[in-house]
Length: 319
Image 1 (tube, one colour):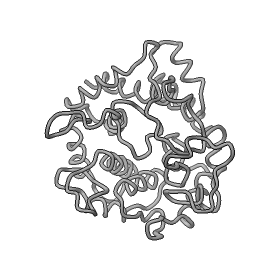
Image 2 (cartoon, one colour):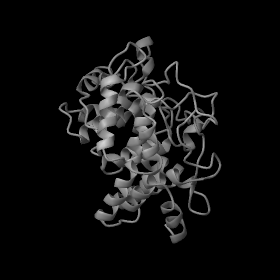
Image 3 (cartoon, rainbow, N blue to C red):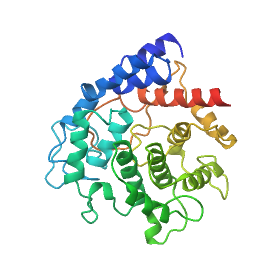
Image 4 (cartoon, one colour):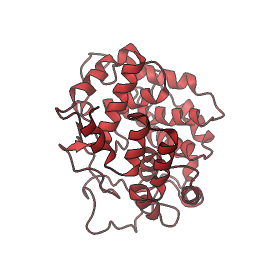
């Protein structure tokens, strides 16, 4: 990483800057910790905390409540799925790496626990609902923020399909897993394991990982064809959508040795790098958002550059 690229990455919100310092520049721990502490105090992190009302964001758990109205002017695409409710907001705060022990964060999570209910049947937020992709996200944020999500984990372990993954359409008879659902559940189970969850989820995680690895992270097991060309372009936030960089970020987060079956996916990431060393924002999932963090599709993306560089750094250091 050249100096110009490093300085561009550091010229950003604390949510990005502290992760660049930790993962790409090897800054001293005390400097990283000081920068991370700023996420809850200023910038995007503070903005999201301030937008919580009555224990929720946008008046809902997964979707905005009926009485919520987007601010004028709206941020994002009002024709897409809105990403302003509690689950996508908590996922974003986790991506920011906001300190779970900050007093304002603890207060926000307590308010979610007491007040937020899923649209499906009014279940309390940290008890989950029925779709694995949603429940995977609930486990991810619940475990990160120190909440009891054992009940959701039990449900997910019982819903794993024979091919190793998960699918939100299983309740409608599907017996084949989905990349989208599987990555959401795997991220949740990994966060749960890192938080010291009571259930051993190692076997379930490895089976889910093998589902992705058998397919080189983006190919059909039956024909070897690319499942979806959009998976070769990288968005952020990813929301519930799968792509190759998201898959690789999961495997990097495990801290384990890269599996040889990741080689082709790594080549995809390398191939998306621009001449200036950055990666673009691509394939943004349309919908309303609380904050604008990037300049739009087709423009250099600090988030994707950070994510791609640390994946490649992990891969180079451990292979």
